[in-house]
Length: 304
Length: 314
Image 1 (cartoon, rainbow over the protein chains, first blue to last red):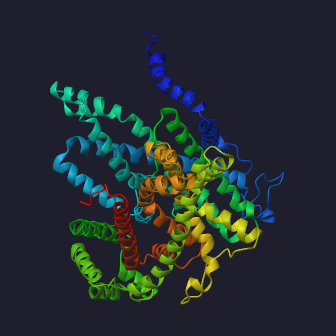
Image 2: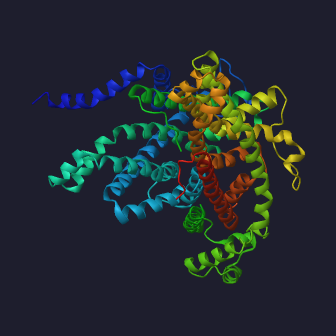
Image 3: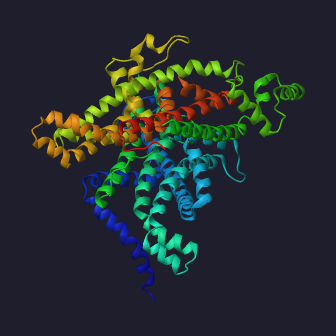
């Protein structure tokens, strides 16, 4: 029984390795995967690799271009841009990943439950989801983010709290959109024979939902996850740009671009460095999403 | 058709009722109290209390919501907390500017995107097609504020062709200096342009592979006629649904684009109202944006039905 644990891990590792192998066979995957790997690496170890503390002022070196001393140049206070990019990666990536995870998990639960249950419950739940969908995404995010800022959670530091609220904002925007997609997938799956026979066998509802329906939504969920993740980064960085992201002095890629806007004539690097950081991250995710669809021969879809 | 209209419009009304209630509920938690905000520095406990009574703020929330809704139905959105002006007038002035920008972006961008999509499909797998597909990937991946600042760096600070800020004197129309619309419009269309282009290309390639296209070619029609008369109209339908799906995105983009270029539109006013906690203004703007979203979805559905006789409107 000694070997049971590695085998258990092996069972979960194999699909992941298969996916990576499949991805590396597509041209999009070959470019996208390294880009994502680079960003993940920065998110995990970046904050400990910074050449300077990210809040350190070098007032005699303000708005400089790249040099040997400051590899990517400096901002309006002479802070090292490389250090700020490296230490800003963790927050935007964790917030986007967590926000999408919660949004997809709750949205999936609502969508599958509503689709499986059907009838009046389905009708009511979906009308409420439609109601939330009639807000343009960013408007809903702005309202939720502004409202969340007024709340205070006890026993939580302000820096942690604002990140929690951004995660909540992303999740709230995603829930109705994910629920709608998963509901329509469920409506198709629940009419299939294996679900009918499970029902005739007298299996309980939770069994049918978790063991029969959920595993069969995997392809839909996979596509949804990649689309949501890239949109989460756009949303989180847009909130940052509009000043509703992580507050100073923590570095936020979106807010860096906003701050750089007034110095754009003096120093283009100040703007271009965070712009490049956001762009490569989202391009990487979109390329991997394209690669996954190509590898599984799913149709190209457009996100909402 | 008439039935479809009535059903859809009443659905929009129900949606807006829900939207107005959620906007009201969300913004109610905001400033805490309009009376405190309005009195500012000179507030004392007594005059805050008096003003609260005068403004009806001591009513329970549902009464205040119904009062607000009653006003909105009659076109009265209340007064701005900042300068006491009627919100309706403030919003109306900016609404025109935003619509101008959106119409300019849409009018120039959609036909251009369709044209490029057709071009890429006809020249499938050529160098130009590959270039366009790389371009569309980049355009889809960049948030509007990144596209915006990069365009400013290229066309304003480096080349000096276009102004970097779209600020106009209050009271003058942006049309007095049309060049200020160009960069915001390109930024606003970026994502949608790429989606329309990709979709048109993918569908046209599919259509060009069908039997009816082969028949048309075999009966001796010119390639141009086969493409434009037979294949393109059929390839356009999914493109329209792409536009529909992305209208909400574009309205969000408007908020960001106006902020990047300091364009005096609804989006900028919305951000100001959030910063200054101007609740009546925020409520009106959020409601207008949600209404614009519902109405443009209806227009998109109607044009879809008009182009596709198989879609029954009911």
